[in-house]
Image (cartoon, rainbow, N blue to C red):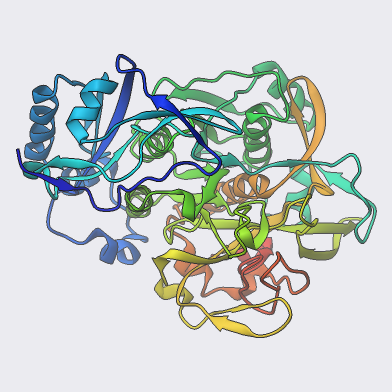
Amino acid sequence: MQRYSLQGSERRELRGAVLVGPADPAERLEVTLVLRRGGTDDLQGKIPALRAKPLSRDDFATQYGARDTDITAVKNFAKAHHITVVSADSARRSVVLSGSVTDFNAAFGVALQQYDHPGGSYRGRTGTLNLPDDLQDVVQAVLGLDNRPQAQAHFRRTRPDAADNGGAPTSYTPLQVAALYGFPAGDGAGQSIGIIELGGGYRPADLKTYFSGLGLTAPKITAVSVDHGRNHATGQPDGPDGEVMLDIEVAGAIAPKAKFAVYFAPNTDAGFLDAITTAIHDKTNAPGIISISWGGPESSWTQQALTAFDQAFQDAAALGITVCIASGDDGSNDGVGDGANHVNFPASSPHVLACGGTRLQAAGSSISAETVWNDGANGGASGGGVSAFFPLPDWQNGLKATKTGGGSEALTNRGVPDVSGDADPESGYNVRVDGSNTVVGGTSAVAPLWAGLIARLNAKRGTSLGFVNPLLYKTSSAFRDITEGNNGAFQASPGWDACTGLGSPNGPELAKL
């Protein structure tokens, strides 16, 4: 059988990992194959035109879903290698396969190994994947053979030893932050918000207590299981529970009458993508806005994953869905520590609204100061910079990234973030996690903040803003321009910058969109 190497599938060992030995040959695993789009039209080129009139999910599946012949070809491939087809979804262009390590080693020409690393252990591989020639061009990505933790949650709790940094540390409820930014009145009625989570869970009793304390009824929340993930509160506020509760409580306070679907999936590249595509193509919950507060440095992803995720976000844009994603909490190097600048993915996709962070200070009911969030190496900073993978989108043409210490560079690739909002834990959000009230910050808070804001705007407009980036970059008046501070390598400056994007929300002007 002739085989080809799947472009972009090369994997390296996780940094700091130690090879233990071959993976258990009898271990059962599930793998997601992403197939090419059906039809001949270029979806990428049609997105701006579709923003005003999005496709329905049914029409999208008909025009751009996977071809029946391609799904059949993958099923035949699976049968030939004694692998079971768990599911096949044309709209999501995904086929999920189940089999043993031995079966998948043979099917994809790999040798799966077991590794230990500082965070635990994982099953992994190195090198490229090899598929039979009759699947060439049919399969665009194979995810899940490697189950290393792919993403981190982007939330930070207040440090007990945090020093005053230009004003006494304080905290706000999400409603107070919304009032300071002048969000338009509303409760998100009629809107549906999807939230992606890669671990942890929520406790209904905590949510009831929290929203009652805000004078609100807890929003309607549906937990959706993806790839066997589930709502599972760990009882550890510093763990993923903190992310889950922050996301729900911030977005839920801003848009309490919206419906919420929380998609729980394993923290792997396959689980993450499957959660995103499930949310995008979910005809039952039908989210019009998706909030994601997880990610990892672009350099930690395979090219096939970067492309597959970005194509999923193209799907969202064509369907009129706004996707808000946290830009990361580790400044301009994104925590990589190799001396170079890095941006966080999936925030670096040009088809999402990347959300950076500020430090917000108030005097009474007004903002007295707002600067780039940067608490230093141990405290976190707004993620931002220039993508090493995604090209420059049209709506960022002519922009420059101002460097700390002077000078600037014209953007040649996608710049991150697009927008920002309060993220510093020292001006953080009052939330409730695992039975205790606490204060949390991070760009994880900014993605659901913008998701709730978009829900209010959509409800007010009566139509979805959808893929909003091109419009926002034409509407500078809709932002509070942040001109002080830096995130490491990049400095805030008038207009767009690689720390806070266009700026934080100017609610009254955004209400005019």
